[in-house]
Image 1: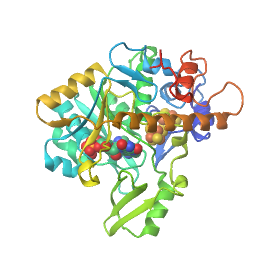
Image 2: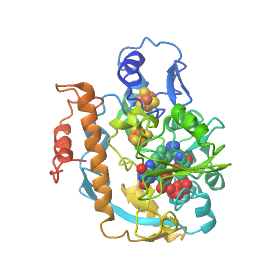
Image 3: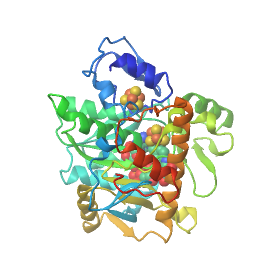
Length: 385
Ligand SMILES: Cc1cc2nc3c(=O)[nH]c(=O)nc-3n(C[C@H](O)[C@H](O)[C@H](O)COP(=O)(O)OP(=O)(O)OC[C@H]3O[C@@H](n4cnc5c(N)ncnc54)[C@H](O)[C@@H]3O)c2cc1C
Ligand code: SF4
Ligand code: SF4
């Protein structure tokens, strides 16, 4: 399996998430605006192709990327491993003001660099054209200049390749769920390659993600709205709208009729909360007014490393924490299950009758258990990640 199969089964099939895991490995493909483009055709047709080995939308074997079920830390089919669930935010109000929500991601990333958990971090950088490109940051001060969410795809994983090429041995990455899957896949196939590409991954900070915008239709809509150059965007809780702040004004786009602006590949996405990260961060859902609520994050702590790291941030006083309101975790599970169910329906529709199920490896013994747990309300998840 090499580039040609990747082209036929992922790019041309509308499954490519734009995670960037297949970019920057060779001169044969590149990233343009928000799409992977084939520059030259590659003749590799065997297991040597790293692009397909790393791709989260090709033969994704859930049992391999999640590893064996863990006894420590609850495991749910909707949200993956959970060792802890909190609301958190940066203690520094100046930092919060610059961040998308509570600034938890920026604080954790800055701490990873300051405390030597990572020598460099890969974040999402913005270009003038609205397209995104990964950026490497190596000082805590730099981190804040990349705060804020842009709801376009960033080929972030190609930044991980670039950091490895530059010689970094401990790399932190801020990753959306599909990017975290690609990084987990790199780890799971690492032994196959002489240079062990997964070994440099030191910490993955996950970003919750419902969908990303497709650049071309969004740019057209932006022009029609007359808000000028894009400054920020957000999804205020409970309003069912996308809030767009431009340098000439503010607009709110209702989600009705929004579908054509969303990347096709997101319809097949099984993960809302970056289940394969060490710590995952999203916007908070509380009963407070949005202006207060938006200054907090929901945080899911996943791994042992993530737990130690998060506790250190609280002990150092750089993060404030509080308990999440009752029912918040259940609400998150409901939303995550709905996204998985929708994606499974879309995959079944795409691949038609028969055992094939899109990018999921149907030889995976774990897959039937996973499907049952997601498709049956209240289904058992024993043995599921
Ligand atoms: C595409 C996208 C969709 C999202 N959807 C949801 C959702 O459905 N529900 C929800 O609760 N939260 C969602 N979020 C997360 C939310 O917008 C915030 O990122 C999160 O609450 C963290 O806030 P913060 O203040 O800690 O982040 P900050 O401290 O401001 O840090 C944000 C970090 O995110 C990185 N980043 C920004 N844009 C991107 C991007 N496009 N791709 C990858 N990394 C990026 C930046 O490099 C920065 O390091 C989404 C984020 C993105 C990027
Ligand atoms: S999903 Fe990621 S690795 Fe797969 S083709 Fe798209 S950009 Fe490349
Ligand atoms: S919805 Fe899924 S596939 Fe789309 S950008 Fe987010 S994590 Fe990636």
